[in-house]
Every structure is written in C-alpha cells, then in structure tokens.
Image (cartoon, rainbow, N blue to C red; front, side, top):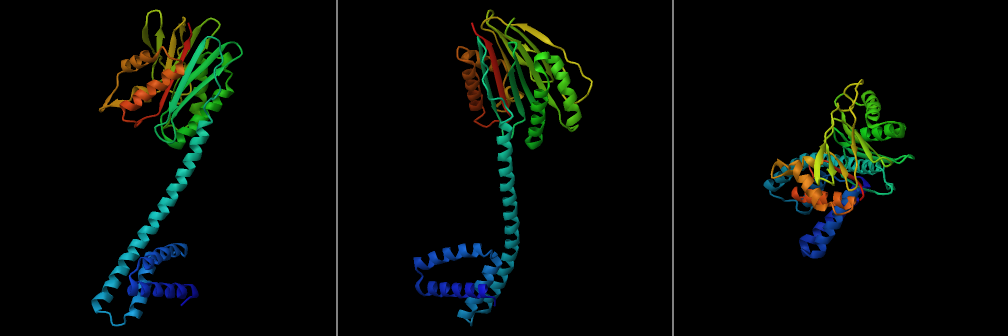
Length: 337
C-alpha cells in the first residue's frame, strides 16, 4: 500500500476505533476534519467507502455475509455517484468561470456608456439604463458639439448576452468615428447602417432612434431605424405626442435612406427617448399602455429630469414585482422655462 494511502488507512482506523469505543462529540469532530483531508487529497466517494470497508473488515473479521454484500452494493452506488459528482463539479467550475467572465464583460460594457454631464445653459437632462440580466442589449449615447448641438441616441440590439454587448461596442466606436456635428440624424443613421450591415451576423439587427437638439434655434431633429417611438411633451398645450419615425432597422440592407423630422422646442417642452423594455413592461400578464407611461412622467414632471426617469423606473419595477423582463432605458431632455 502506498505511503499516503497507508497513513490515511491508519488514521481512519484509529478514528473509527475511537468512535466505536467512545461515541463522543470529539470523535465526530475528528471525522469532520478527516473529510477536509479527503478533499485535499482528492479522494473520491467510492475510495472512502472502500477505505471504510477495508478498515471495518480488519476490525471485525467475522462480519455477517449480508453486511459484506451490502458494502459491495454501496461501493457500486458510490462509484456511480462519484462519477456524477465529479461531472457536476466540473460543470459548476465551468459555470463559475463563465460567471466571472460575464462579470468582467458587464463591467467593460458599462465603460461603453457616456459618463460626462451635459453642460448646456437652460437644458435639463436625465437618463437611466438598467439591464434585465448581467449583460444589456440596450445602448444610449449623448454628445455635445462645439456649436451648441446635443446629439442623443437610444439603441436596442436584438439579441442577448455577449453577442449583443459586442454589437454595442461596435455601435459606440462607429458613432465616435462619424463626425456627428456635420451630420443630421437621417444621414448619421444611413452611415451607421452601412457599418452595421457589413459587420454583424444576418440573424442580428439593431433598432435606434437618434436626435439632434440645436440649442441655438431650439429645434430638435430626429430620425428612427425601427425603434420604439418616443414622446414629445408640449408645455403650452400640456400634451404628449408620439415621436413617430419610419425607417428600416439597422443591418438588414446596405442601401437604406431615413426620413428626418423636426420639432420647434418651446420653454418647458421636453422629449423622451426609450427602449421597448419600458413600453413592454407586464402587469398581471398584460403589457402596460403607453398612456400609463406618459401619466407617470406627468406625475413627476415638476422634478429635475434625472429624478423623473429614476421615479418612473422605480414605479415600473414595482409594478413588475421587481423582476425586469427586458432591458430598460429611459432618457429625457428638457428645455427649461
């Protein structure tokens, strides 16, 4: 018998003999410590049963035949259990590795989102984006240029997990490479569409709405690529209307043109961009109505824009029993009175 096995054999024999004679708590504690040593030496369950059987037969040579047979059966059971257990542990190790990799990817994904503040006189801005899982398929973007314009975008990658995150990174760097200050929303979407069509799989596509707010003449230009319509709030009329856009999703066809729309923004007006994770919230199995969302925004519109989006998110999260079913992104930009 190998030296290691011999020492384990003697150790277990002494422990078992002590327990059978004393049946003390101390002997049971020694057994718990022995199990840790088993793990360190990578002993399998069947090896433990075999060890117990060998030690016990030496200590009690005249065992009844049925007891010996029962050990044989137990050994066979533990062989199967040991194989299944090792496979289970291997899967758990792999799961932990994937979990760790996803955590790293999720942190990297957060770096793709803008973190600087919009610093424009008379402008109030707020945004919230919460993934339903570790990785998000939503992306938002905003930028200020040197001429007083603010570019805003919300996109939704149709897909989940790492592939969606990779698409998100492509969108970010493509948008950064496009001279936004010289492009109106329709032209920007056309440029993005060509990039996306060349670089993503045919089974994935991206929806997006892009707007450009010119703070000099207070006009909001916008265009959409198959994205969830946002809202425009007109303060003078105290009404919400949909920012309806027509346009093919990004990535389906290389040669696509997009219509561009414009709104004159009056003091107190604001526009709302969002992902379908906002409008497709479910309560008791049914989707909420879009009017419910505008009612929530109206309820909090006296607050700063960031507080509005935070409060709306909390209300919708509560309505869903705090279980998001889809990624949630909500963005508001308001011209102050």
